[in-house]
Length: 553
Image: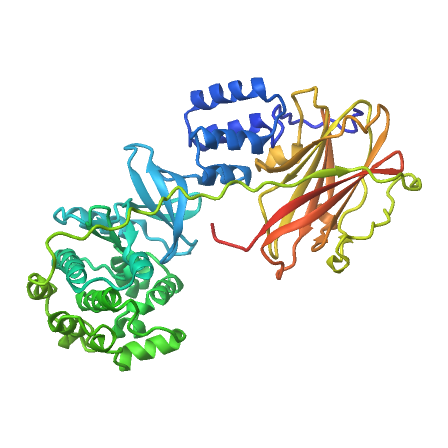
């Protein structure tokens, strides 16, 4: 292959190969170096073709990494698999304030739930550590799950809780219907006991709701997300706030189903009676199978909590014991002065109604229900020979699209290079496409018989890439021929300022920048790469760019 320029930086591992993937796994610290190296060596003996996607599937099958970790690494996000002292294994869901991930402590090897918070300007680590220290003074209670760590890593803020296995009260009720009154009373007594002890130590929960109540396989009641209320309570003093006002508003917005009337007006006015009101709404949900004020928009719910009375439990579930109904209604009084002075009084009233032995519950849902890494379908088609093209940069006549309404349009021009020996073509997408953002696509032509190759611009920027495919073209490329590549997409425009190519060692790389429109829908975006040889169209490569909506993480 002819050299055009000599670059000063040399990379020996081609991004997107199995060697590159193994290196990213080691660099991300999600698996032991010796295990990764030995597994890769064994894999390459029977699979000589370097392909990051295939080796990632092999690593997942052996349990060395999770599917979530493999997907992150292929998307160029390996550096975010280690947050602080924790290694992220999977995503559990999206909760109040941010996404929640399953993680393992690298020091103690214990499971944790890690909440990644949105990037904000204000982040008072000293205040957060103070909250952690306060939790450590609380007596050990079965079911109490306070947050145990807080910090900042890679520009992201996080809170850590011990991970709890089980199913949320909301999941159980939505799947099996309202709980028997005795079981609902048992859960109420357990939650009231935990909250009462925390209130005695001047700690609020602030997010009591059915999705934060977990029922373990043995029937143990767990209260999750403890500490969010303590964070929001400090938000009234801006200079020492852990979260900014918009974060607090988002958190309150997501808990409106069970928010106390005084909180929906002033999100910083947290008190023990607020937790009591939320507990009443939670038990109301457990008994009736619905929230006190279902339906309606943001404003409707705020108004309802302030001035409306929920549908009486007796009209929804007539067999509910009057004692339980009265207890729930008192906890949900509009005025804090009309509620119980302490949640210990709730325990006292309901202890005789609560069942001593919890009924059997379904086994917890498997957390390991992961989505496999995306696969790109890439096909080489050899249509009849087209008329010869003129030398140099040219316009390629676009073939009639299969779906005429697709409106395929050219987004990049030609690049013509001198080929002196059989080569291999690899296409890499730098992460997923995002609506309204630039997506970088890199086309690498290299000699498959050589192990070294360079993508100089990428190496200098230290940007790992996700491979979209690896297409051998040995059979159709002849020694001394010229290759031309013409990329088309149904959406997006080319940023001319960011189109470039680099040539180093035995590889030449064409760099494309595809700007996706803000209204680009999430999902697969078809791309077509037309291959020309000596002025003729010799093949077409179809592949897919996964497009995602923008997110903070």
